[in-house]
Length: 359
Image (cartoon, rainbow, N blue to C red; front, side):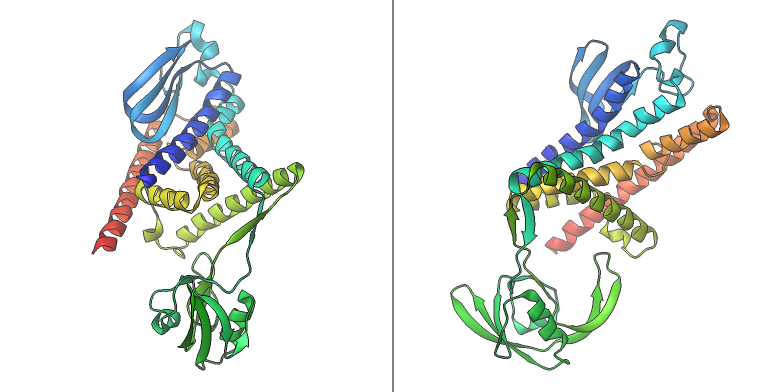
């Protein structure tokens, strides 16, 4: 239930922010907005204020802002050309389209700023507590568990994870005797490191050394920062997330990250629920990260996405005339097919994960 509520809350906010970007830039350039919808398909509820109908529609995975004169080939009366999207300059239309992804990126800055301003700057606690055990690893075979606190290695006291890491790395593959605290008792566990590849966050091997197959706990403490510092940190963190997202896309294209890692709505809901269990700060950070992802993905040069429209507008700016209606329609059909295929694929990945989990 937490997963569903978190998913609805997070995705609903991000879709609203995205469409609000399109809406406000359309209003700025005096384009008539006919509909503002959260969701696609049949209207569930709606109310008209002024010239715009605000709606919540049946299919929640997206939204749209319908503008007057937006569709290619649409007949526009002479009196309505002043409020028509098609009759605005290329630059104005560019900003209207770009407004959605831009608002998602700016919203991420806002989210991270609120996190830094009110919670503080998170710093990783340097301890010898185990936070992760890899399946089939030497640590798992030895009986080590998540939450164990390593006290000594070969009777030498360890107080930092770097000491744990260096002891394992320099072991030469010889058996290690680890004294750990588990709950209220202390245990002695013997484990033999194995030589294996160390991988970065994208799964690429960076070096080879002796490992036990465990990672430290990611416990954090928050230190207060000033308002100017929190703003600076928010922009820096957003930029880091943008770079990470772009690199992730590049690594998928290069097949470094397997396509099976792609997740859809079910996976997003699961992660949102997990983050909520960890605390509101985690969910807030996840919201900011997802907002960056949504903004960047919408800028991909795929017809029907905002990025595809921006490509068409850029071509129009260079050619000094719009692309032909037939070319635009065919490009949008290709975009629909690509997007539909991608949605089916991520749904398949989500269902395959669930099936694998319960088998």
